[in-house]
Length: 185
Image 1 (tube, helix red, strand yellow):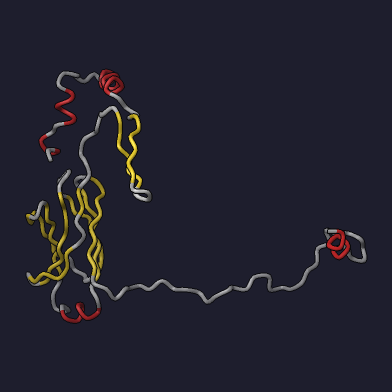
Image 2 (cartoon, helix red, strand yellow):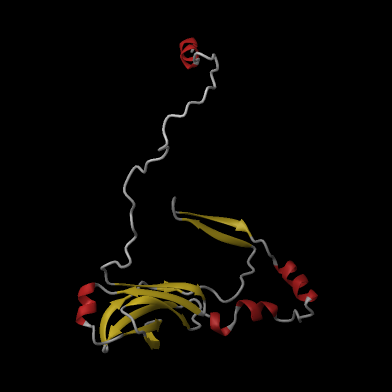
């Protein structure tokens, strides 16, 4: 330790002496990486935003763009394996928001061109459209494959107080909020 202190002392006897070594203080360690504008893959992905709104993005490979250059794709939305909606899109890669109310339902998208199947997206389950007022919530930890029950933050008494403030009727509130026709599984 004493050798380190002695070696840090300079002729002016200050250990905190600052020396200017070079004008080029920072030199990049590697070359700059540019994110490509386009990935040469075939892909369509659907993501739920809420029970009524879905975000879909797609891209076609250069080979498929060349194959279908005279035509435009259609995005078809399927709920529980039934086509419920389709829309023409005017690009071979892009994204779109689609509105369709489908809580608790299996949803996926298909990209087709000239009524020919090209790609199918991942399948998702649309999120709930109602609040849950159970006494506890179940949380899943995928990293260790376990589930944990924690007390709910809003119980039925708090809900009743909230509704009284807004001057709403409490009669039949359980059926109204938990068992709406759109949320039946």
